[in-house]
Amino acid sequence: MKLGHELAGLTAGLDQLYRSTKSSDGFLDREGLIPVAMAPVEPILLRDYNEATERLQNLINRLPQEAESELRLAYLSEMADSLLMLIETFQEKPVSFQERLKRQLRVDTQKIGAEIFDGYYSTIREKLDELGYRSGDLTEDVKRFEKDNRVAPQAVLATLGELTKEARRRSNAMMYDLDDDWIEPVAAQDVPFSAYCDYPGRRLILNLDLPYTTYSLKHLATHEAFPGHLVHMGLRERYVKEGLMPLDGAQVVTSSASSALFEGIADNGLFFIDWVDTPADELAVALQRLRSASRCNAAWMLHVENKSLEDIAEITAQTAFQEVSTVRSRLSFLKHGLRAPFVYAYWCGEVAVHDVWKTVEKDRRKEFWDHLYGHMHTPSTLRDFWK
Image (cartoon, rainbow, N blue to C red; front, side):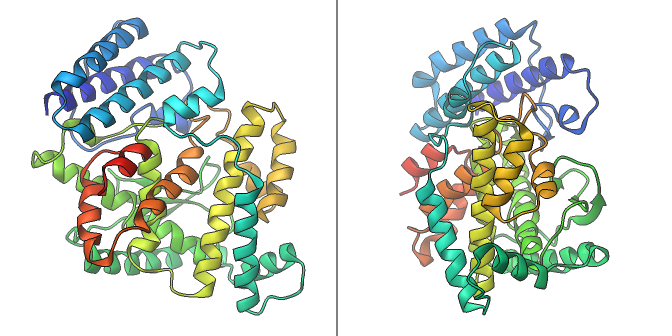
């Protein structure tokens, strides 16, 4: 527990340093490095980024002798190095986008290849055929399916609320009962996200500038609430309070080694509660994955290939069967210094968790969830330490 307490204090101190350099009052800057802390953490006061680097390096050097387990050694090593990488970006050192993905998010993915997209297109075509959308034009069929299932703007919040209640019922029955905890859907506009889990305020903030189908709202109910972020943070708060998880587990740290698993757990919520049970659900999952992969490639085009956001929005809209205005809204945070690589946390995290989930026998699901939600992980630690 001592190392987790030290890492939490250093991360909180780094958050203070980062916030002190930001003059913007925009949503993303207000979030800072730690948007949510589920337990009080006393920051270690740091004079500057050089002192932060020295202290983190000292922690890394001690890990082989002091880490409580092989899993903690692996996780803390990756997380501390991730913070060192973040410091380099805060100091505006020349760091490549590829290096940020590898060291900061701990993912090997670069630009996602055509074979991945072809797999999604194949599934989308197959499920559209099953549902009777057979014009022969894939783009037309996708748009018709989504139009037929679009929720009227005035009904979006109520629909999301009902879907969230069903997601809670399933999560409580199959996974963890959090005593009927709730998160209230509320509307927002002109924000750089589609939905956001305000854990302290128990609000599920939904961007009403974007269109939603029943299936995309179903995804958001599980991603943001049950058994996604709300459940994940609720359990981490409980485990830290009970002494079952080190203090660093109480912090959500943006664009760090923990981000891919934070988003990957949420993106697998539909599967955890057995809520992918129709061809339309399978189609919606394929579309979600396609669009998530497309946003990764949009970030790559911006930061590596130096394309303009306008060109990227056009390319991504065509690739992902979306309107340019919708894509442009979803890509608005790609130029934010802290969050530039963060979009990779979704696709890479979903794949990392799902690849392991597919190997879990039904009678070991509870054991798997306890391991997944009860420990801090990166993609590689989950792969290497789940048996």
